[in-house]
Image 1 (cartoon, chains in turn green, brown):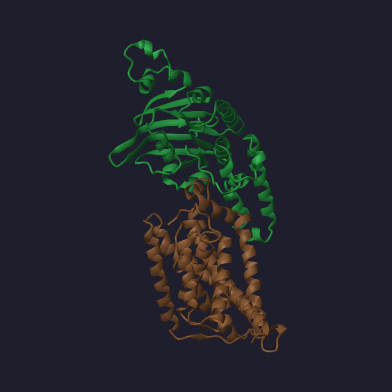
Image 2: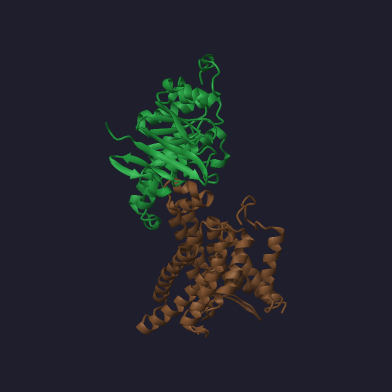
Length: 273
Length: 309
């Protein structure tokens, strides 16, 4: 069996006496959507923050295998995780560059490529031909994702002025402009209406199928999770309580207990999640 | 005197604009650093002073070596001063500010004041406390209006200062708005963590911001050493405070604000000296700082939503 894209082993994160994540292990594969679900405070975002380099895990190993090269994420700085291991993430509360235009937001995401092509800006100032070519390519990639996320019409508007749904899509487009092998989305459907939510599903499937990108998803919206996930991991109080395909997880008594409380008779369990 | 009043006014306008150009160059260093890490770099005036000293030293070395053709000498001095001062800017950030980045808000500010005192003393010890004179090299000028009592002239040096400032400002605006480095700087200014998650090396971007500020201060230093013909280890203090005032007046964090603020401070200083009293010109400038801080803390072009410090 080939090495999974992301292998999380015995991840534990303590904040003082509080154990936010306790001995969690799971795999995420390329070209698959892996959902991490769980009640509020289960430690989902903490897992994400460890993967993206926001937190240094107390215990555990996070191996990302990119083109056969393993990267140990827990030892890398935030910008190396993005630049070398190629992990991109979005946030529950949107974090765009609100005063830059939509297009600029996407071009900043290709910073390293452009910085190298422009000889750290110096050569670019003097019209180095390699730089104009790299810049044109960067704009092309940005346009490609603008089209995919339905933002072409607002490319030159200031990102902060977009409506909420547009900002969410822009955040995903920006993450994809870093050309990641693993895309981590923290509640991408939060605050979206049913139509926008359906569009999001289409977009995520497209990213999975066309770009062979692994997607790791935190989501509360069960319709999103059950429709598009290939693999679901359930956390509760920092522990992994279930791991498997959506249908199996949906009917797992432990998951039902975590979401609905302990059933007094088994009839409650049939109600589903 | 009535016949010469207009000429006198025009002459002060030219002097004020020259002075303002120099302040604007220094003010950009304050405003950029504030924009990106929300800190006032109080050692920036000393960086400018070091730029002026390197100019004087390089001019003397070139004199000994025998490079006397003024345009070539000026070019070499500018490049040498920009490079070495840029290195000073980088070093100051690396040793005095970066280790304190995660620390409480006042720590880098105190470190900056310490750095400022250190650099003054370092230059005083290394170069001596005496004023260093510089032979005037670019003489002459253009007589714009020949009046009976008063002639309006603009010296070649004033022209060079204004032209150079204009070119640097335009180049700089382009750098910030349309190059990868400028985009990274704006991204770091708006959300540093997010920028680094997109692969931008935030530490390096901040270092380069310090280097760019120091390079502009070096140009100001070269220009001032030529304009006044003297430098000493203490010039950075007052010039730094005035440039800081200019940055606050224009709206700290705003690049066009720093340019506008610099020019206004230069003009105010020149006109106050000309029409009221030369002794109180610094009082006039710092009164403006106080008035701006009271009535319009965001400055002329500042954005009210900026909430740093």
